[in-house]
Image (cartoon, rainbow, N blue to C red; front, top):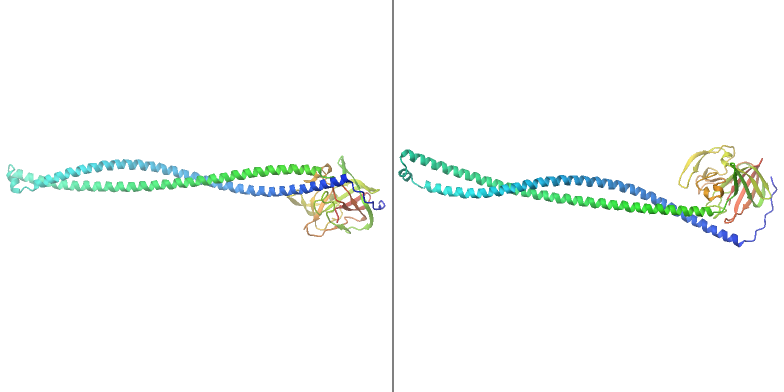
Length: 416
């Protein structure tokens, strides 16, 4: 273990550094604004997609109803056409029959009158005008039969005329009813057409809005990538043949003495914000082959999960999803009680903001974050050191680390 270093004097403020610090603060603030815009857009997009799915179902249902209405309308129009032809034929027949009946009525009235006149002859007069008694009887019977048949036929013709008139009235009434039904069907079709046009317009409007939203989302993501590309490096690392060489300079280095496994290292915090931290968490690193010389800690970074004892924890794989997984393949204790991992080691969904696209630690918070126990504990016993890390664009980062011997170190960043 290296000897503790005396606190370094506070450096004279450099205007260029102060300018860079302000630029980075603006950068981080803009990143946060863009992230909020993205979150809002993603929620809006999901909501719109649900609405469009519902709208598609409604439009499909309306389309089926319109198809049904059109089929019914075609059938109704076909029936109407038949009825109109039949009605036309019946009206023609009824008109002819009416004219014929009128003529027959006149004829029969005249015949009845003539028959009546003949029947006014007395039997004696009829007898005198006949050639014998036999002719008299024949003429008398003939006149009676003609008279009865004419009256019976006239009554039948009058009944037929009345019947056809009734049929005509009935057909006209039916024609009126069917015409009204056609009007109702046409109105129903118009209503359905209007509904589907409205729903289709709503769908077009929503899809257009969704396209705009997606376009904005892509634009915001590109801006965020640029902003993240401008973010300052958290650590100086070099990756060669899979080995990650690590070197950091620690200011205000202090040797705090021995600490046992599970001993209190400090309290989780957000030091380094805004440039090097976006919220309270523990950035937990592990080194092998490490050495501490003149305030500079060097070594080879290893995945902390290879040192920690196995534990089932919730592990975030992106800013919207995570999974319960077993983490740990070593024997060290976890530095946070009931932890969850908010970012893994190496290349992650967020590592593009770091140098070499590489996250050098496990980011850990309590499972019930922002609640829970924020105490940071020693993963293993050793010699505890404290210090401060300075990076351009970041506020000072409070860090503590433990020399476990044999070149093994554990580091605890962003403490209060």
